[in-house]
Figure 1: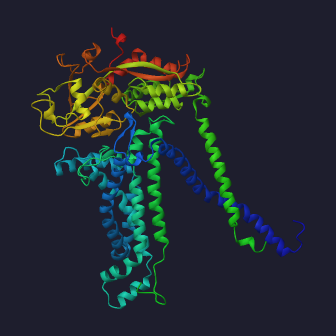
Figure 2 (figure 1 turned 45 degrees about the vertical axis):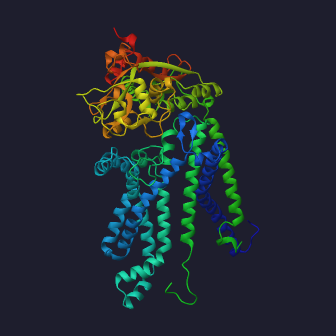
Figure 3 (figure 1 turned 60 degrees about the vertical axis):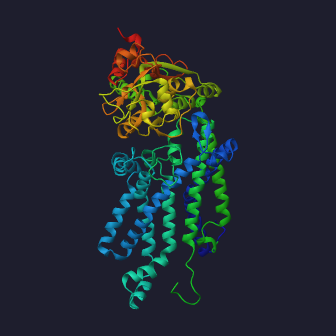
Amino acid sequence: MSRIRDPKKRSLFLRHLREEPIEVLLFLCASFSIVVLFLMLFFITKEGSQAFSNFGIDLIIGQRWETNENLFGAFPLIYGSIMVVAGALVIAIPLGVTTAIFIAEILPFSLRDLIKSLIELLASVPSIIYGFIGVIYLAPQISSFFGISSGTVALTASLVLAIMTVPTIVGVSGEILSAVPKEYKEAALALGATRWQTIRSVVVPIAKSGILASIMLGFGRAIGETVAVLMVAGNTAVIPTPPWSFLSPVYPLTAVIAMQMGEAAVGSLEYSALFGLGLILFILTFIVNTLADMIVKRKPKMRSGRKWPL
Amino acid sequence: MNRNANKGISTTVAIIGMIVLLTIGATAGYYAGISLTPSQQEFPEDGAWRTASITLSGSTTVLPIANAGSIAFMNKYSTTTVTVQGGGSGVGYSNIIDGVVNMGMASREPKTTEITNAKGKSPAVNLWLHPIALDAVCVIVHPSVANSSHQLNLTLQEVGKIYAGIFTYWDEVQEGLPHQQITVVVREPGSGTRGTFEEYTMDPWNYNVTANKSEQPGNPAVRTRVESTQYSIGYVGFGFLSENMHTVSLAKETGKPYVYPAVTSIAKGEYPVSRYLYLVTNGQPQSGSLTDRFIDFVLSHEGQQIVEENGFLKLPYVYP
């Protein structure tokens, strides 16, 4: 250090010496989550691939999941997961997107923050509470309304998941909708468009990719939900007859893992089968989240030279 | 130096740093995993039992007894800590084999796979079963199927056929029952209650459980399910019976008398599906350790009183 005689260069060097450790520290913190993610991925892949070498493709297409008989066909479980999530999205998407549009465009400014925080409150309620409400209140209602003997069916699980997914969709869509530049809306209104025409033809098309991304994130949340579906889905590892019947019980992947992992001895056949399920779940969620990211990053196509109409 | 002052970390450094961190993380994880094997774990029980702490996990049938027992024990010896968790007998065996708890709770004997797992550990785990109570597995149905005015009587094989899916409607089982689909409720695969139940109602005839069944986690969950689902059937430990369900009288086979589960009929051995409830340790617990003293407490007069209060039966030789 004594070598640098020029005072200006010297102070720069000292400043760099102070900055470096801080940058390294920030780097360590930032990489922590990435490192954990990759380690988890390695672990699940390692344990889950054991399942695929044990059972092969039978793990995914097999129709019977019976641990005590060493039958590990996860097809009814995968079907159950997807069915319940599909049902949830059918309810949550219209509800969520319209709520987001309402909050972003129509609600007076003064109420906006209040309503937004109330909806975010829905997201912060622990999922077991939803499961509890589902079992104690929703299931008997559904059972008496449809005249079926048991209310813990795919429909109940979809309803509970929908309530949990709506805040995700509203939150992200709301952000995207608020981010639409004011100038576009003002231009439309100046040209004589009504409020609804502005929303329909200007705001929503611009926010389309963001709304799609929020739906994908909602999907990710719903398919990973464990406790609530465990309590209300019925836990029957069969494909409903007929296959589209929501008034039949199903057994989502997450519920199976939660129920049966505790007693699977480390390294045993069922242990690897359950990790196989976990791997399937991980891959599904990963694909959906990646798609969501890709769609959000995509810039809306613009015709050359003109900023709008898009 | 001037150029780099505001650029932050270069890309190469970042990538190399990530790879290094990943390797460190993976190695740390590997060694952490190894240290979880029973041989490395030490439980502080020698001598200073008064300030020690132990954990139990496993059967949800034994859980109320262990829970009440632990509270009473900790009231008596306030510096000890006894923690009790559920999960099912399968979890209990799996945990004691993996060495993550001091004692398992089980409502069935270990399966052959569990014994093999235990022996395969190094050092080998020696499963010691300590019976602490007498219990019976009771078959329950929703009051829509039968109620106190019309007691439902079934043989073990008939129950087995229901669970195997051979009977799917209640009127196939017996005349006078409603023409409604049977909702079959079971426990998770490792459950002790399920193991005992299937041992008596399905294994003798090599029946396999139907796929069309609802899996529930724990005795209380089965009870809630059967109480709230019409035309359903399930099984719970004797201590979990309630007025909101109908309990079935079982006969060992046709021609034998139908026995209703009650303290007398179970204690006398008349009820066909009775079983012991166990605390499971790895080998004989060290004399004077907290584990040893807790087992002694549960087997003592006070402990057996707690067993009775929770709806189960004292061990037979405790009866006067």
